[in-house]
Amino acid sequence: MQSQSTSVINMLNAFRLENPEVVQDIPVWHFCDNEIDANDCGELVLSGDKQATSPSLWGIERRKEPMPQVGDLDLITNWQGEALAIIQTKSVKLVAFNKISQAYAFKEGEGDKSLTYWKEVHWLYYQRELAPFDMEPTTEMPIVCIEFEVIFKL
Image 1: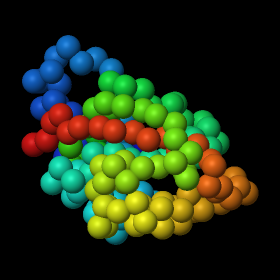
Image 2 (image 1 turned 30 degrees about the horizontal axis):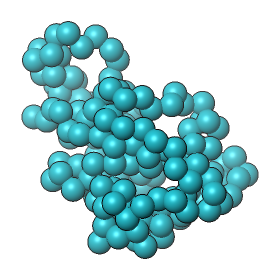
Image 3 (image 1 turned 120 degrees about the vertical axis):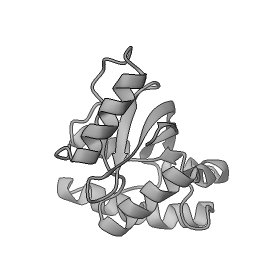
Image 4 (image 1 turned 60 degrees about the vertical axis):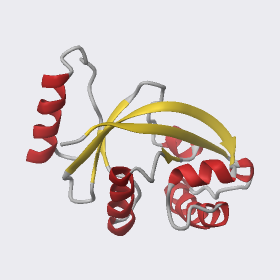
């Protein structure tokens, strides 16, 4: 988890003021593993083009992260840790890499939104994601397909 910037604290306070019934902790994170992609994906979320994200199940398990659940809230930042939006998970499905659909790639909203683009950039990401665990991606590996919607932004 990132240290909380003033913008993160302000967004969390504003969200809780409007939603006092929400008592759960809200994780704070950015997409991707590099500045350019993290900032691009953050902007795609704000524009409404990005409505899904896809970590590998193997990466989640090796990092000992909780499995995403429908209803989860997350505060998304840019690479610099500035708050962008709070998203809510709407759907979580395990799908083999080689079974990802064009419709799902479109929901990810990246590049030209094609399945070809999705496979190219995500394969490279999964290689980097799994490298610390001395693992390589496979075409059959399970991908955690998370669909979300923006529920709050300042």
